[in-house]
Length: 266
Image (cartoon, rainbow, N blue to C red):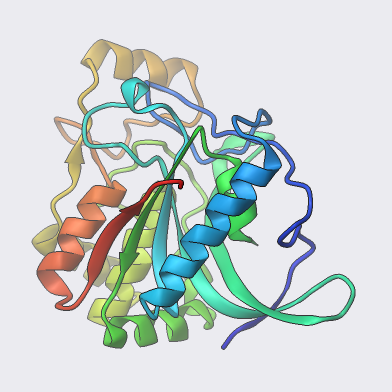
């Protein structure tokens, strides 16, 4: 079990308000500041998600949140931010050892939205950035979970990160990445047991079906000119990207035993 020291808010502490940024009707992986729910409601929902993960026996799972209202995002993109939830030992600020899920994220840099970094926080922090309290969960098979745990704990995990960020990054090409594309790359590296980018992208192209970006070409072109986190440089023809839903369909095809579910508040 990983041991992680987090300077983060733990259960029953205050939640700093935040909400995902947006572009082209979708959502980026930044963390601006406006809460949609009181801390107590966010904490209760995060605890519910953790209990469901534990009931599924998940040592590592893929966790998704809604960063924008469903009516504001293109079709097929209900969940706008995706991360890994890893069952971990956590060293609290007072030195106590706790067990909890930690979320391993790719987030945009606040002062450079066309760049990203890898960070960790807790489910309560993860859902503090949600505009609607609904979670998507994918629990991989036991074998794939073990491979993912080993990969996330290794230096290879960071090597799969591409710092150049695009909110609609094409999963078939190198050069740009978003949170969902990073999760797909890590999952694929665990499945095909390689971090060689050419081999990895060849396998993704052969087995993964991305989500078409259903936004007008004019709006996409305008966005790419005006917004740093939108790039069309890696797109060929109709833009495509990675979504939580497309990752779920991919794993149901290649990972027998994977489970996909959604969680609603009580």
